[in-house]
Length: 408
Image (cartoon, rainbow, N blue to C red):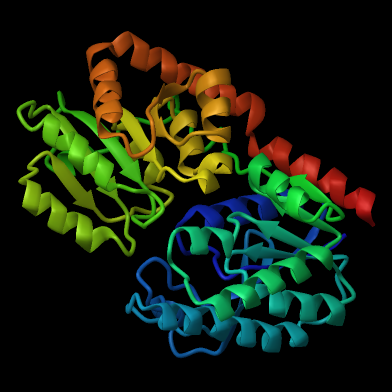
């Protein structure tokens, strides 16, 4: 079986889609799938081409047996929507060009969306390579962009919705990262076949019994007795991270409680300004760390805060950062209603739910966890058990392999 993965995001970049696709590809390779990846020159999240890849229109490398072809991409630190479109479409064009030159046919072409516009290249390459198209949806774009107010242009939205429909209907299956995504697609396009391909976690890599706390606390000026509540991920519009800063203000006179926002994104500068405005000495902004460092960081914190904005759109969302935290027995404060709440709070009992964008609810959850260390410990243990049973990457890859065999 030969599989071509088309994605704008891939290691050595760090991030949720990068890790998810790489880990899936490595495991499919182990069961005998011949994997080729067509991706962009790495640039995320700094939005500048990594030094080893600069000045190149094409590059080939191998990563743990994966054949990786890289094509050029336009990047800019400007956050304007026009520059984002230039970023997306530059890779659409370059991936189509480079993809034509990859030798041989493929059984399947899996395209990662977003960005949705990569579907143009995917449909063309699937036809050229005689491959069955699999459209892998990790976010319902353009629906999410429209509801978040990121895109308001009616012409562009119509073009995007038309492309979305075309990509789905030309795919042998559409894989959705959550059950909610699959249900949304099935409701709008009843003839489209969907398959739930969840994110997951490597339980061997994220194993608290094998990892000692790193010197991360000391390096960042935290004390042994500090209770650290961590948000690690994209600092964007969808997350509604203002709620963490507003809740932190309530604890300003409890210096042992620290709130850390680790990562980068379009909202980071605004949140740093809000921190100064509110005088929050207990809030700390840190840059993202490599995957290699992340287990040590998680071993060093007390809890994770995982919020999203209060939108119906997110009732089917499962933030990827949930899995690593739970694998490391870090209890979560979850501000995501719907599917995530049902799985990780109701069924898994892995953390405490708070209503999205409700700072008083978050304050209550922080207080409860801070005052009850036994509860925090038990929630963490429940989390590792639950993800082992339901979101183990080994099982996810094996199930997908069986599904692909049935489609040959």
